Image (tube, rainbow, N blue to C red):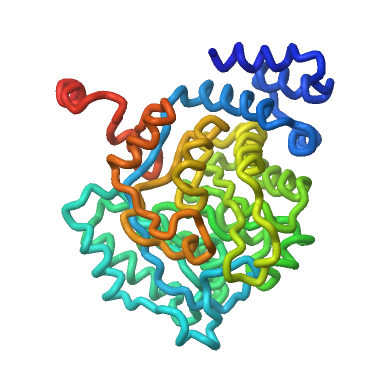
Length: 388
């Protein structure tokens, strides 16, 4: 059924709450949802209701197109000066012998191992190590660009950057300017967690606060850089905390237009200080993605990070507003596998990703980091050769 007709049919249900019907009509009219609307969707919206509306918005924006990219990760260290209760990845600096620390030479070896392979992006993110300062990473990026100038460097969360900038005694604006000049092309979305201090003080009190996180992304946007944004959901937060978080992101996007993608991240409870906190259900995961798509109306893309959700659940999100399932990730990224993600060896090649998207009756399109189309895999190789 056409997504518009499906949404309109839902609104004709006589049992539908009046408030939900008003929200549905807003969506069909392309009107912005309020914070109260989003909270009502979380509290009263059924999976079928929010899913149908989110799929309508997804198809209105992107049709069946589902993006992925070819990337690889470098995780410089899991040694960290901060102690976040939800983190299963880092090792405190005092116990750094239990973790790993990569040298510049080791990281360049990883980069060079992809020579001749059609990757477009290196994603650099890890713990906050006091010896891996701003100069250390600027030198690394210069070496990467000297070796492979076209490789897009997406790296460093505001948690890492804030620490680097404070140690270097530079402002967010000056720090971002220097990092960009050294080769940094864009920022990932990590470190956002939940912005509201009521939750942040309980789960990650010692790292950069919401204002600092947003300031660094705004500084990047003002330099013409694009960034992503995340939200860690499904732990001790309430629905209104999620709405507050998304509203702050939406407000900054109104101001700068620099965000590419919103990425809800599912809390995993393995081997961390919050292991007694139950994880969200698959139904709640799908509702989160759907409501994210409906509320974040100025974000072009909604991404599901498939190594965290697992392949089948990531595939399912494509019916709940998601139009991007991240990359091939041709390495074994440890951040989520150590937290108990569905994927203990999160690697998929291009053929596997294309197949996964096609199985969901969507159109697989390889993109670069900035969503420029590289290859449309919905057409045959012969058709691509003729068109090219």
